[in-house]
Length: 169
Image (cartoon, rainbow, N blue to C red; front, side, top):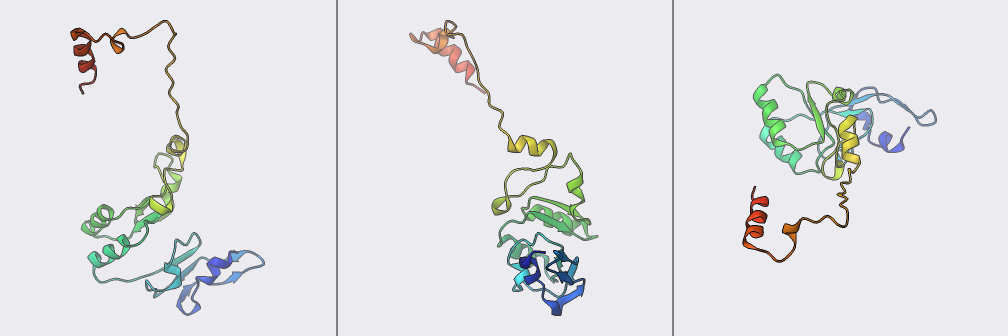
């Protein structure tokens, strides 16, 4: 069990779980409530079975607070209000996310997933992960006696016209 995770648990705020056994490396899935932005658990990404519950009264204020922090690896929206869902998804930048679910998307191979900002770059799952974490090197091999005449002087009017046409998009 990670000492860092155990140090994030405020026993006064545990509403579910909270048991840990360091020698056995075990930590209960734990729900903490009420949590505020100043609680230690909100200082960094958690990467463990801890769920802090924060409440808010104004979505705009909440979004501004989240945007003032480093971009998270994941974003989860739980709501029945489609306008609120759309506003959150359009306002925030995060690696991957879900609406009314948590990390189920990790099991969907066709959904790219990975961090942004300090939470990581690129995508790490499936073909998207392979493409993101590899580099396809392109190399054109031309025999030494083959040249595209238009690329070399003298630049006649016809050559200049042809080159200009090549580079017009």
